[in-house]
Length: 390
Image 1: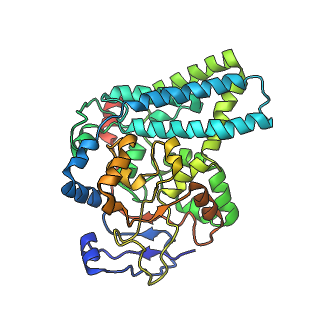
Image 2: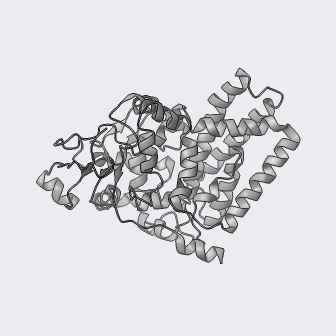
């Protein structure tokens, strides 16, 4: 595995202008993550893009199409659950339907909830929260409320990116903290813990991680830091339990098993699940004395994918674009990419999520240690959550 990389504490712009390469140091007492002491790259690039293209802020705001897509996928999952109600759970037909249709559909709903959590389905934060609970139903377990922040603010979709984000903090606290504190140890719950990286540092370990990664992403946040249980969490749980009860009562237990299996496979060895790993893991970790491939940042921390699976996943593959402008909805991310193409052309990217999973498992130089970490950062939404709880 690669050694720890300590990026010099030099401002990003200074490093770029001076063409300063990485000078990694080996510290056997430290972990093997790649440590950076520069600002996360997305804020810097966002400011540069807005300066070059002020009209980019006009892309921010809700996308009405989202609610119709969610309604269609929820309907599809209910139809499949009804069709399989008398099919044995351990049959090939049940598994293939859950893998090909169910896992793809529930991955779509995972990412719909992600989109909705950024207040990008409706103008009203309350409407977004409630609709996320609806999108959660075919997932089988309560999920949507666990990552959102409280807000009653409304904002015009014509607002600037900064204004839209400031007035709409009703997004996942875990997820928004991932945006605000990208790579910050102890805050960004997308980062694997040192315990995970140590015990899963092998081909079998990485295969285990890829197979059960949905469980890692579900349980890890609670291990890193906990959030209060709010009224919205309670509503999410009660709505899901009631839905599951009615589902089993009318269609039988197989229908619920179909939803659960679909959710598990959506975060397992499935092509669409490749985005979890593709987004922030280093696949070409720098060796000692070797500068990073891209000159846009000291180390690339986010990777985009521009392939066909974006059609099924709310364009989550355009991940640099999403982190640069979280208030731009999925339908307008391609327009942002085209508008500011010179900012993205030289960034490293992935051409296949399936290959990402394969390489992650089999490449000895790639693994859970291959993430960029930094210190600092802050949690998002703590005050609002406390206010709601009180």
